[in-house]
Length: 107
Image (cartoon, rainbow, N blue to C red; front, top):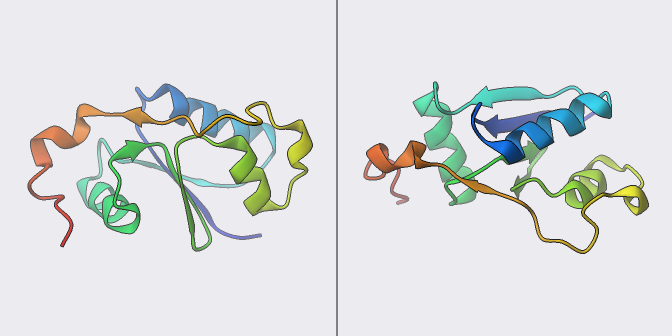
């Protein structure tokens, strides 16, 4: 199985949805709390160019927001049972980055 990294914070409701999805599907993932790990937060922003949460890295693919259909497609899971069919991904804009916005500017 491919490596999965979930960039999240404890206060992000869509991060909790992603966490619950992976646990419910019995999918192993690394949960990275970017509110406690500034290096990981900067890595996340550099990879995606976005400061939204959650961000899910599945192999070389970055999914911004909780998009169950996109996650299932990347994992090869049947997408016909997706709860958010036809909806865009759901993302949370955290104030986590406001104090460090200058440090996180993309080059």
